[in-house]
Length: 256
Length: 328
Ligand SMILES: Cc1cc2nc3c(=O)[nH]c(=O)nc-3n(C[C@H](O)[C@H](O)[C@H](O)COP(=O)(O)OP(=O)(O)OC[C@H]3O[C@@H](n4cnc5c(N)ncnc54)[C@H](O)[C@@H]3O)c2cc1C
Ligand SMILES: Nc1ncnc2c1ncn2[C@@H]1O[C@H](COP(=O)(O)O)[C@@H](O)[C@H]1O
Image 1 (cartoon, helix red, strand yellow):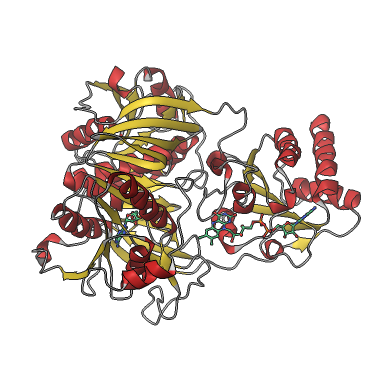
Image 2: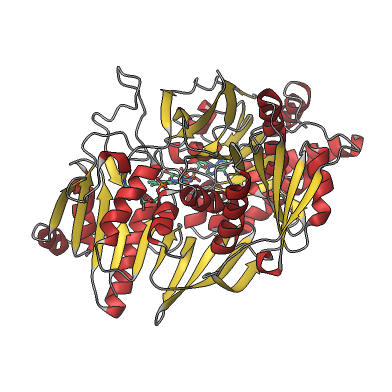
């Protein structure tokens, strides 16, 4: 079973966000991680491979620093990595998906895994767009995956419960928290990763011309939220404080 | 005349989701300013009865997609049926709720239509004849505003519980247009559905949320929060520490890798206020924190804080709220 994992490198969840002089999100000096949901996707890909043989390929659209995230996935056990650089061009979800679908379309795959959302400026749509471009069925927000002959059985989160969905392979499945516990790379894995193939590609290599990668949406501006104004600590013993709090919620905030 | 401003009317078990009413209110304003019709898309098996409510909340037209094949949501069935309808009528704007269903459907439909989609918006406004969409990014640490200059319809999902709902107009009706849906071949076969029965509101729609963290000390103590929640008609949430400890299911987790909520009131009990937790609840209108550590980060964002032992404070709060309820 050949598995492709779409992997995005995101800001660390602790990262402080600032704007640069052009009013864009400042990327200088921010520590970067694998999007946590994509880490579940990598782990799941490895587990499927370990049961059924085949290869795990991780693909990403991004600039040179993304190699670090891809190396980490290789160190976990993925077999090869492909990084496509958009060459400094503006991208939106449509463009990213167009590029990813082009790369994945040139590979052999039975199962495509992704995160259900990127935690940075992600918007829970790239995986769905890729599935549409490739004409594949998708199951979103999966917490349990059983791979069978020619189909998968996926448990997904829905509002107020879960459902079990069967789809034929090849298919796109997105990972939700709970799917698995990602492994840490071992020392040996890290050493081996250095020798695994990391292919770097440009849009030209993929045969994509400028007209095919025009974003649908355009950013007008970025800004930081005003800081929340500090509140107050309600003094006194527990009983006193509790009744003062309830009074404040009723009389000041007027919400109870 | 252009094909109108469209809203996806999401229903569950024959009831409209609250976000649908929020969308109708926001879209009504855009429709009036643009002099376009406001149309709702209502899909399911036996849902015609909801069309009246959609009219009262501002819809001019309701496209009714009813079929056995649409009884349960499937990505393929709904994407095909909704895309066909959009292709036929060519709306200029199409809004959905940022819900489990809405975001899946929106992304698939947007790609089939080769158009742009803004996710998880907290505001939509008309500026010089162009719609500007505002959405939080980096877990609420920044905002993005964007436009979709050419592709149509411009699509967006809107975060529940953020936009206000206009009061309904009794007697206002929408023209109902029955369409025979084209769900096509559906590749997702639903083998089983497990619903947790809960009398409490959905976390993402709740007006009040009572949430517990590692300070709850164990799963059994969540009953205390449930009691407080029931007095307030609230939902119960949890921090990741509580979820990872197995005290609460992941469906209750609030934060960057859990749910994003924006209730009127969020009561955090025994939660330190890590940045990843704040990411999920920082847009709550009022935050109350109960924590025994006066230095806890949660106090930096709380409107009201009580420094104390939650096992002492929460039972007192339950009493106080009960008293208030009895007074009416
Ligand atoms: C990639 C990533 C994603 C994450 N996503 C999330 C997420 O989605 N949601 C989330 O919540 N976290 C998330 N986290 C984890 C986050 O960093 C914190 O570890 C977590 O929020 C801590 O939970 P807590 O506040 O319950 O526990 P703690 O930080 O341990 O705080 C417990 C608090 O309870 C107080 N307390 C203890 N006993 C009592 C008592 N008797 N009475 C009153 N107060 C008491 C303590 O003073 C303390 O402040 C994420 C982390 C990472 C790295
Ligand atoms: N630039 C990218 N490179 C590779 N995969 C991506 C990229 N952007 C998004 N994805 C994948 O699509 C998922 C959803 O991303 P998003 O739609 O941006 O929230 C992510 O979890 C990744 O699996």
